[in-house]
Length: 81
Image (tube, rainbow, N blue to C red):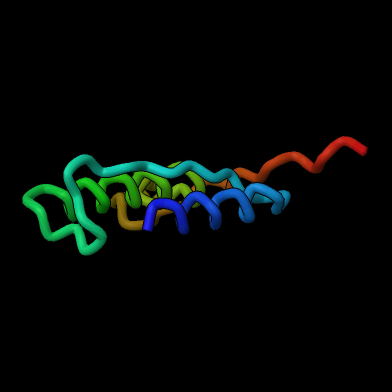
């Protein structure tokens, strides 16, 4: 399974807007049934969403704190020709 993920990562790195990083969860199988494994995957996924989509960033804009404005998405600069 890890080899397939590495092959996919290699293909994705050729795309201009894609940063690729493989994280290995220690002692976890492919179904993440081991204690704490799925929680770790959820933490890694949440960090990805915060980094690339601004999800979960506390930036309330309304007077009662009821309106949330996400930050502008981060994009990779275009390649230099």
